[in-house]
Image 1 (cartoon, one colour):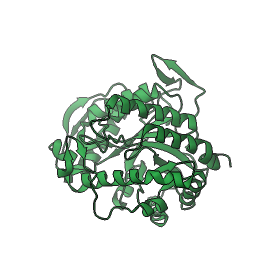
Image 2: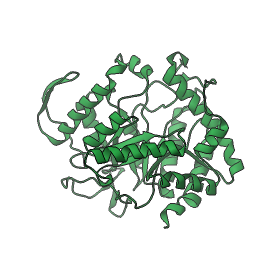
Image 3: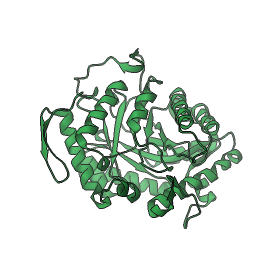
Image 4: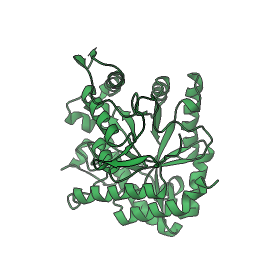
Length: 380
């Protein structure tokens, strides 16, 4: 992947466009050769603290954080998708990406991830194409099978069909972006010939990223020529190294190299003026983990859309979070990121607004990251 440039961006109709040919068959953000330096993206989980938090204020704050992340030099912003729960109150990341693109010029937007079993592939293919056009070709499409039975039950879908539905949906969308008059008769979808319009600005389609947590999903993504997204929320560095090794081993077994794919890893990050000040973020880590745990293991813990943050078994201690996550003053955060870089991580997606963190806290952390941490990796 290359660094993003904005010299050809123009304003048209209220959104940012790039005057490039859409018939080149190339992504506007091609893969960067391995070993050319760390890359950084912002990840938005859209945690909602409850009825006291107005959604227009919450979304406005996050849009401001996106624009500020671009100013600080981050290359991408990744947007979660979840439904019916405070853990992640963003059921339509493509709409958010279109709005955010109208307020930025360079940063790219990724979906992290679209839960494909919840969509009809023809409709989603069209919505992605519209979003790619309206963001000026700054779209990355992350997709996955979904993680929470709670959401599947509300859509009256069997959770154990998630992987099969995802693969069939993606296969149809890939055809729909390339071909006219696509018809399909499959296990989950059947329809007569249809042509999806408009076409994506990036041809034949935006880069595709697959949520990958196990060897099977790594093999599927790499075998089909897609990029990978994974999470290393609580993992110590040696466990992160195992995931990178799995990625490289799977590439080798498929007869490919790191130039043929990409691996983005998600981690919580918070930068403060000092290590002592950074410790104030640890309760936010605990809150995020508790809501994730309750949603994953006990749907009865959701009331009015708000997921419980009561204590759970085996939750990370404050010291475990302190040792494993990117939390600290600038020098400590640099060392923590360097440890990840040393084991082969070169695309780091950072959740920098988590738990009950306030907007000013998140903005301060972003500012310190851009001024004090990022230069250690971009000025070599």
